[in-house]
Amino acid sequence: MKLRPILGYTAAGATILAAMLTPFLLMGYFANGVAALPLHVDEVYSGGPKARTVQMGAYSIAIHRPVYPHYLQSEKPFVQLDWTPVSAMPEHVSDVVDIDGDGRPDIRVSFDVPRDPKAPLRVDVEPLNPRYLPMRNVGKEKFSRLIVRVDNAILVRVPLAN
Amino acid sequence: MATNAQSPRLARPEPRGIGWSLLLTLPIAVWSLLMLFRPGMDTNPKSRIAAALTALFMTALFFMMMRTGNTYRWRRIFFVSVGVLFPVGFIYNIVSMRGTMGIPVEEMIAGRTPFCFMPIPLLILPAALTRTLVFPGSIVPGGGASGAGMAAMVGMWLAMTLVLGKGWCSYACFFGGIEEGVAAIPNRARIHKIDPRWRYGPWAVLLAMVLLSLALFEPAYCMWLCPFKAVSEYIAARNLIGLIQNAIFVLLFAGLVIVLPFLTKKRTQCSFFCPFGAFQSIFNKISAFEVKIDKERCKPCLACQNACPNLSLSQESIARGETLMSCMKCGACVDTCPRQAVVWHIKGTEIAWKPERARLMFLYGAWAIAVMFGGTIIYGGVATILHFIA
Image (tube, rainbow over all chains, first blue to last red; front, side, top):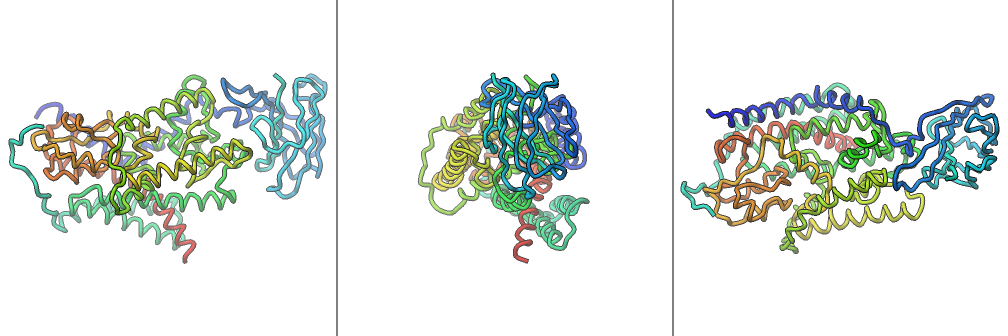
């Protein structure tokens, strides 16, 4: 028998073996391999890594690093702030936040905290530093200017001036 | 074309005996029970009934393939079932979780957007160049909408692609069955002549979407063109752009998945448009199995070309004795050929040398994957229906 048919049948047999091993071994093996790659979800979606946390009595504000969109992305640069936990927050929040940690206030953020987790949220942002853009009665217009509730946190994204 | 040196095999082979067919089906019966009653599956009585029905269904279809020697007809029943039942189970789960088919922005930010295989080719360039995944999901195990994360879906796709190659589009895709079902509605084709240049459509869409995804840093196909958003989940429209996106999804679904398959009797979305199908064609090159044409036997009647649901045969390719690289191994051409000149083939062997052995080897691998993946989808759809009616 020639080599090529032997190789062909070997590959065909290996294919059946691969099918049998797929649910028990191969899927997990490949999935772990992909998960181990040095990849991260685009920060326009994830909000970027947390830079520091500010304690505000019963609740805290996590301040993320600014996110700068890539190439032709239609979003503006923004910074994400997470208020958490929602259960410890008052019915109305109006906080002055020092985003860049220089000891001077950068923005004032005001929003209501409805007890119904599905109730729509609206936020006002008054910039105290020209680096940040104002927001007036904003819901969830774009990834770079929004307020949303995710699990037990309220996330606000404030657009940066160019 | 080539003259016929051998005696023609005009008649279909005799059906296998029931006993021999049952024996060949036994491994698949065991595999079906193993896959559908595996640890971790729901154990409530309705789910058990759904699992038993699915195992019986998958085993019965394989038995009929063995008994009749026909692949396409029985595979199509499976594939259409997956296409119809996937939205049933998926939409029920999505609506149960979040109350709507629309993906709210909160879920995107939380990395809980369900990840299907369609965006895989769109993620490669941004990931390679910037280590960034341009999809609002989660890569970590335990993340994502199903707790599986993108890594699990990509891992599953890699493993299944090793087995199936482009056969993915006939044995694993949970969308293609809808249009195959519409194309199977019995009536005459109203559009007979299709310009062969449409075959390049999926490649053009793939190239455009890969480049757009890199430029815009978003899964452009999912955001703008996926027809199956209409029957799975769509972007919750927050503004005019969202409304336009959803209108495009619905129009493409109506045109490519309903109207054109009905008029042409072809899988038009797959043939003219699907970028993932084009991407998957590349993996036909590493598959051990293919469909060949025995030029000794072929009188070019073009029955195979007419039967192909995916425009994967041309007169030139028939003359060369092969299918195009977009062949998805559905078996329509093999089952249609009146001279049995179109055969299943293992690469490296002589054409038409024990084609039934090649068919069996391919089908064992493909059906094992079909049971594991498509069978689970059918099970999910049946369990959902049982939940509502019983």
